[in-house]
Length: 264
Ligand code: ACM
Image (cartoon, rainbow, N blue to C red; front, side, top):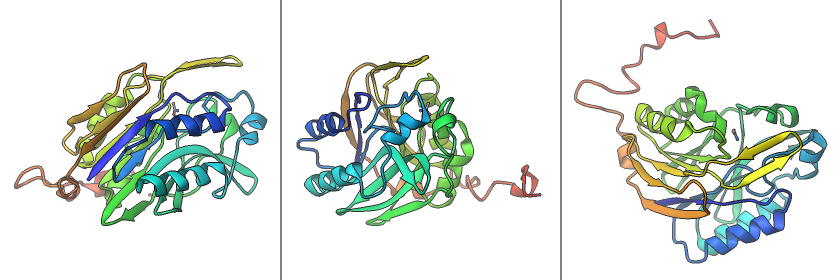
């Protein structure tokens, strides 16, 4: 199957322009899965909860409409980030859209820095979306630093982790090599580029979007300072074999009886 990402450069607060940017970058893409950055519709650096709320939408809002139209046009499953309003809370979420419908939404569990001032942490466990026999899990940006996120998705059966990001630290791309190796899953980290200087914050987003293979190999690495689109072919059967050799299986060899468990 063919999977890829768009490394975009969203303009803060300009949803329509951000949709247009993505639309112009996908003209003749033929792929099975496309991952867009975290908060690709709005930008990242909010200055208040009220401001973040002003961009929030539900699963029938402009982002859903845009992604549904896009997925119909290029016949592709798409995962992309947006500010989600649900009841009286807002979440840093990513929706998965396929075959003209929103299949679901992942709400970022591990909020970074001032995100904690605007967003509620995810209130649902990670989940797998099965599309034509491919198992897709979703995590968002800073979730990478908690190995439990990728592990949970892998234990649930993920073949591929779609990973929308707005990275500002330099460690994630290297960490994803380990996340993929220790779980034998593929991951698509769709980062953004550009800078945002708002309020007291000045973020430089680090680019280097990455497609990481089940064995830790890097199949695609984007530049750190330019918009970039890339797709690669992957064989998901490789992600279903958790054997490292005749004696070691990554899941069966775990000694969970001795691991620290906060339930106990
Ligand atoms: C991040 O989680 N967007 C740094």
